[in-house]
Amino acid sequence: MSRDQAYGGIILIVALLIAVFYIAIFIGEYVGLRFLIALKWWAIALPVAIFVLAVLAICMWIGWTMLTTPPPAPLEAEPTLPTSEAETKPTKEK
Image (cartoon, rainbow, N blue to C red; front, side, top):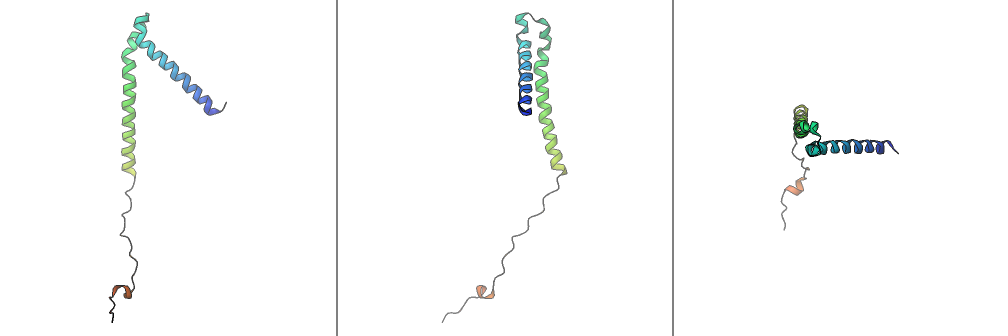
């Protein structure tokens, strides 16, 4: 088993345990686990707070990047190819 697979397994197990605990919080009052009822508010407030802080952190990162990045160099006009006099003067046909 590679290191990436081990990390994937750990992430899977931790996420599964959190999901089971999260569901137990909401069905705890029906099963008789009264001590979990007090966690109901936190089960909603904590993920919302984490999401809001993550969005604000991304906004701060974007703002910092825009603040510290120097402006791009101005674009110059496209250089024109020099033309010969024969192309610019009309020719007289006889």
